[in-house]
Image (tube, rainbow, N blue to C red; front, side, top):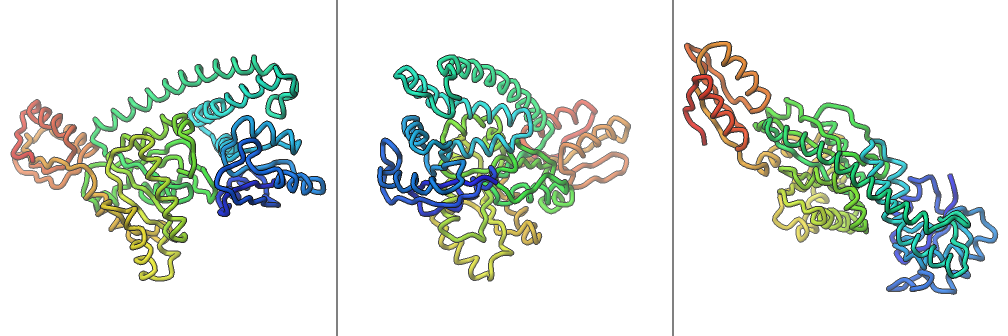
Length: 424
């Protein structure tokens, strides 16, 4: 693990320390400067720069981390001052994304974000090179940065084309799911809130769960287990686990992950997960960040707040006190308090899900007793929630489904000489 030095204007360094650790760096020294705005030239003042340089003389440090977003000119001056590689918060996050990316789509999205990040820095290097200054660490010495800039533009164009093809394929799969009668529920929230664990519990499958930042970069979609469906009394539900949120994520990074985050925006319901075991001030920050980023991706679906990890809270009174202090952010949204780890209040969660999903149509029908009806029933079992079936000289079926599927079912009943008794 490499050694890093942190430069920050923010006294809360827990998150940036976790980010550094995730790319295998330990912060051995924190240099804090209390000021409202960063210095326009070097982010921190000259006195702090001198203090940091003196520290570096006697320590093995291979990375300088700035807990903020650097302008290209600031980055260039800091690398020149310290003669070390300098990462700002955004570059640190992108490095972690690159490390976590496994699917082709995730790798393309990360690469697009990295190139988007590099563009203004390369422009700065071109300016410096033409002024006779050495380009710095990112450009690799005397590398022809103007050629590199043109290559970046070509690569970005190519990646966008590839991502659009993948997005079109995802859109087609989504369309098929809708036509098959599925409701789509997206699990969103701050990184490490327990999203993948909830997906595993409700689908009874094993998706990788690791106590580390951004273990999920690609959306994972699973069908909710039938044993839970019997509780909720709904047509088939699909759950999608998505990339975790984090504060101060630039809008252009969100844009790069548009095709992934689109799964949240088009969902019938969003489960916004929150770790309730943390201090209230941290919960407030993370909840505000998550809600802000849902706005960024134009998510307009109903939001159900899921406060997780209540098993780590000492008493019900403490839990209620926390919820009370968050009511101004919760506003009029529905919420549920659960523990995925201890399987607490999962039935209550499904009751809340049931209340927040779009309304569905109940249909009662009479079908002839023949093979064609049996084939039709198999289809209904896959695409709807069968509430009751009675057999006599005909088949009486009572089912529930969503609006878009109900219209097709009514038409198909007529085609096999069946009869719709009620549809409401």
